[in-house]
Every structure is written in C-alpha cells, then in structure tokens.
Length: 194
Image 1: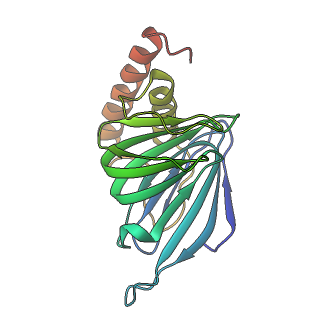
Image 2 (image 1 turned 45 degrees about the vertical axis):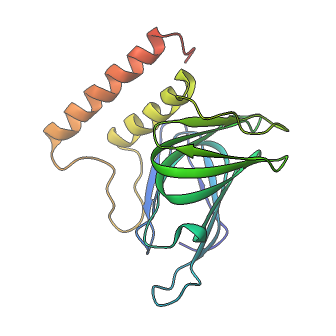
Image 3 (image 1 turned 135 degrees about the horizontal axis):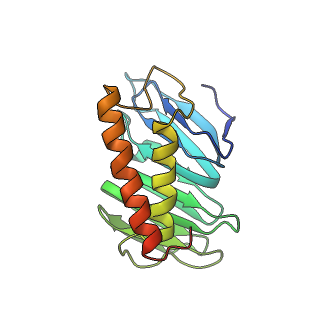
C-alpha cells in the first residue's frame, strides 16, 4: 500500500488490511478511508501512519510502531492512539463516534478540546462541538460495527498480507456469525433505528 491511497467500499463489501508493522485496518460497508501517509522503519523512530476516515466505519488495531506514530483524522475529530483497538464511525454530516475496545485514545474536536477515552467506552463528536464525555457506545454505533463484522464474515473483500477476514474453520465462522446476528437483533429491539 502507498501514501494517498483511498479505500472505498460498497454497501455489500468490507476490507481488512494488514500493514508492514502489523497494524490492522478494517473498513466496513459504504465507507471511505484514505491512507495519507505510511512510513515504517523498524530500525528507527521515524515511523508514521496518518489515516483519514471520511465516512463509514473502520476498526484500527495498532501494530509495532510507537503510539505517537499514529494519527487518525475524521471531519470533526483527531484521534491520538495509546496502543489500542478502537472503531471509528463517521456519519454523513461528519459526526464521529469512537469506541475503544482495548487501550485508550485521546480525541480532540475541531475546537481543540481533548478527551481521553478508556477501554469499553466511547465518545461522540458533533460538527463544531467538543467530544462528549466517555460513556458506553450508543446502539446505532454498535449496529454499524456489527454490520461491518457480519459483512467480513459473509465474504467482504480482504487485502494485504493474507490477514484473513474470517475464522479458522467454517464451524467457528458460523458460530461467530450467529453471535453477531443475535447482538445486532438485540440492538434493533432496543430501538437503535437501524
């Protein structure tokens, strides 16, 4: 993959990419992500990854680079990484939700005010507003994440390094898909409007 590369997915596709430093980027359906810059040199401290998520959903699993080497941007927020797994959802109006699964992130809104988000919590950034206080993720965001996972399991695209989009065996994949489908149904019943 090269700098300034655009990853755009359709409604029925998703992509999972493994970078040289073992960073994993998963891009969900109807999404657009641009790799603005990627420099990896395992022998120096000059590694850098800058990614812009314009719309849709994307999950980031950091690799071997130091946490200061990562910068993730959206139309309304800049995300600083602290060795982590997190998912970003960007709505059509640029509103951004960040859900941290492991580790922590620092999120800064357009107004320059930052908030630290620990594992298990999320923040939302509306256009022109500061990030919300960390709280459990809302049902709409959880549903978008589940849709990305289901699309990958059902055969969404896979790119780079043979990272794989599914499980080790068909039975494992079926069980994982059923769990995701159950979770998605629970979110819909809770009134997420999806």
